[in-house]
Image 1 (cartoon, rainbow, N blue to C red):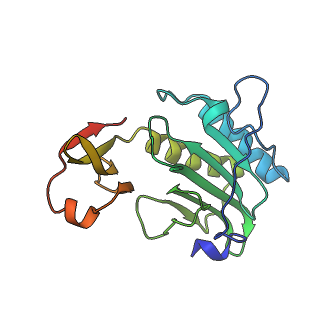
Image 2 (image 1 turned 30 degrees about the vertical axis):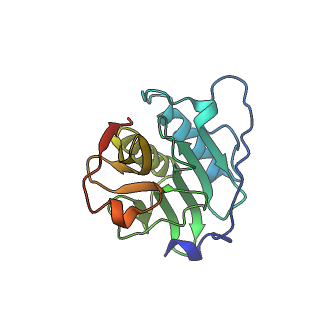
Amino acid sequence: MLNRFVEAPWQRHDRVVVEAAGARWFPDEIGRHEGEIAFLEQLRREASGWDVDGLSPEDDTSSQVWLAPLYVDVDVPGLTIRRRTLQVGYWTNGPFGQALHGVWGDDYLLDDHDGNDPENLTVVGVRASHENYAQWAAAWLLRQLKRPVVREEWLTGDRVAAATWRLDDTGRVLARHGNGFRRLMRRRADRVVTVR
């Protein structure tokens, strides 16, 4: 399970975004050692070819090295839900050697990761270059950024009483907002809006 690798995964974090000169992907860190540096450099090269509406390097991506893994995240453009990001953790040398995990996350770093969930990125026990790991991370991130998201709304009069944000291709719920979900979700949503 991922949580035993992360130092204090239950603690909230406040992301600090460092302004970089020019548009640079994952601008906050350079890495603690050559493995993380190589990973970040390759990830930046991969990200420079991304074509995602509304995604900007300096505003929507960050990297941190204060945890055991190198941590990167991407704010998904167009989502109005509170702090729902794509999160990736890369261990150059953990209890199981190199490891890479990715998840649709929240305020808590990588805590939603489940290695048995096909929606998540899980690479453990594979001996490969840091650049290969970065390519796998970039491919997973881009695939997630391209997925369609819809917002389902349940109305009370003209007011939205509850809403869900779902991945349209699988139906997975990313977030819920409002009250009375159990009661309201017994019926179809009153309105479905394509978010991205």
